[in-house]
Image 1 (spheres, rainbow, N blue to C red):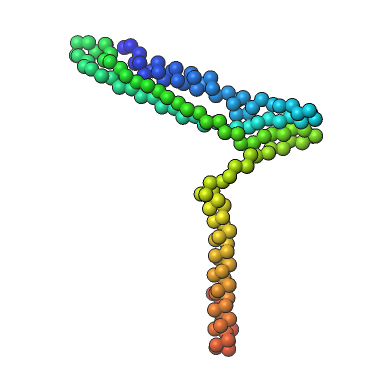
Image 2 (spheres, rainbow, N blue to C red):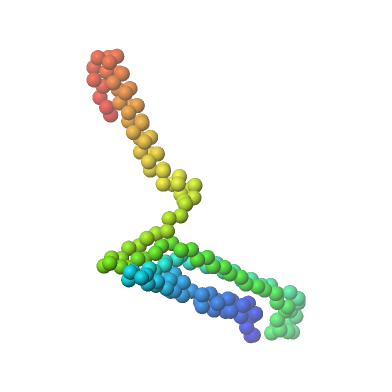
Length: 145
């Protein structure tokens, strides 16, 4: 049986992606500073890919080997985002991340532990005050459970 046209489409697209994916895409070319320091950019790479197709027309029982009209396509995309610089010099290696403004969701997630801690402190203080009021009213210490 003959190769399906979608196979050629997929092979071409995958070959193109293979050529784009290179270690130099993620860990960039080193840059030498005048003082002897070497700076290496580090990036995050994301790829997306899709392909599809459809056959139109009739296949007769007598001509199973012939292909119907085929329509198809493929597409892809890539995002390269710098995330840090590796600085090598003066006997040290440092990773210097690129600070980005966090999204509102990230900010909330960062503040959740602090919020929970403050809420627990508030309830402990409130519980302690109510026990002291009971001691003053009854004149006897109240056992904490």
